Image 1 (cartoon, rainbow, N blue to C red):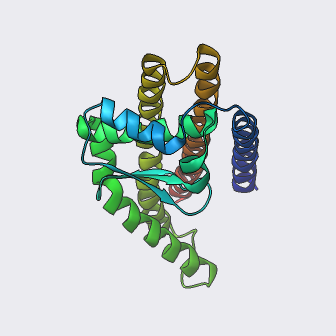
Image 2 (tube, one colour):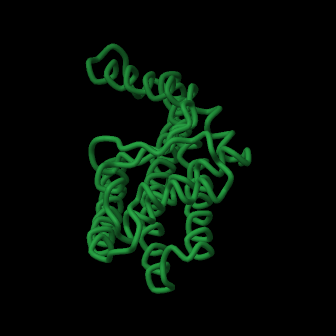
Image 3 (cartoon, rainbow, N blue to C red):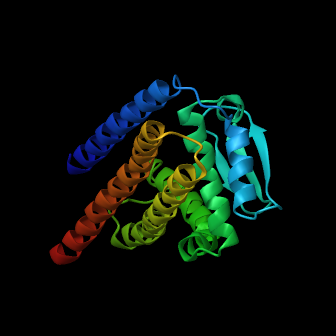
Length: 227
């Protein structure tokens, strides 16, 4: 029951934050500026002296990301082609990651190094969960539970390391937007608000993951005391 409460509370917070994020981006998508998302990204890269990163369009919604392996800023179709405050904020944020990469930002480097471990842990968590569901072993087994905690700790740590990376990318984006004159002061404030709610989705996810981890540790410690 306690676990269900934690999961339910985490989902509720995530839904509230996601709903606010969608409302803000829908609202700010109605405010035009003079450049498309692609043009904003190209300008930010150029003004930061980055010439080896391409800006490309990627299918879908909320698919925006920076890929350090092939040095591409991938913007969703709407962000790439639209000229509004929301598109500009997203494009500049993703370019913030490119600037981090160029300047060897420590948290981004640490996050990138963790990716293989996170992928392994995520896959193993699925195997352990499915095996427990189908009765291969009991999730109440202390050894299995500690293995699960160790794997879950890796994904939780990754979620928290992601936070400074995302907040810093938004900070870089907003500073550049202000200094470059891309947006007026009012538009800048709206872009800041949109990026704040985007960052809150990462924060809610990290806190939810931490709450689950604490629950599992308490369960394991409780089982040890009973022994």
